Image 1: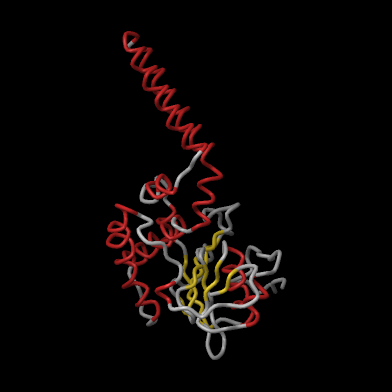
Image 2: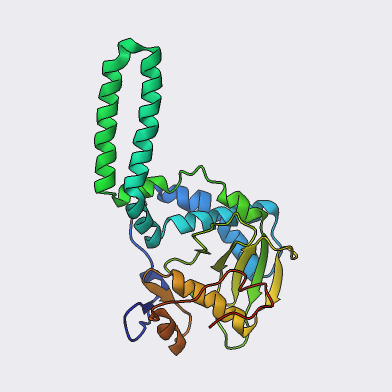
Length: 265
């Protein structure tokens, strides 16, 4: 386990890292049964280089989407965006209440009561965005990102010999300023020490296993390190991991993968 800002990694058992007991409360069973369990079988098939069905691809897409929402970086985004989220909810509720008051003027006092209570709750959310509120929002989504990920072309990069893929406390990499909708967007996710997924809109054969070049391995690992909030995990001790983790800035480029154009190091 590599810790950002430290000089040396720690050798720890898997069961002792990247966990917080009872973090998800009543949603633990939902995440385990509805998200993780269906994806585990798909991950096994990918590691064995077996083809996956559309339904299995969708199950893994949901897993990656929810994964990206339940990491420390997601909680930080939730905290940063809490005032905006609170204001949007208040504005939406206020519009609905005003429309209701117009049709039912005798209910104005009740609407005002609801409005004031909602403002109090949302103000508290904006000022104190707790983990409990964040966790409650993880299973709820109106976004169609999993469907988009399923529609994208998946390439499984495979590394051999002495090369490895690493992972982190925030392993799902998306160019956040553009998302996954534009045709130049992509998403990467390390599946094992030997296989990393790249989802893109480029017209290549879906579910192709491609032997990764040294440059592609570096690019995928750079994305993982760039995304890390604090920790990076590796099956082996490598000097380059700590150097990369403690680097002040990383150059991540669109089209760096699945492109013949060389990438900057």
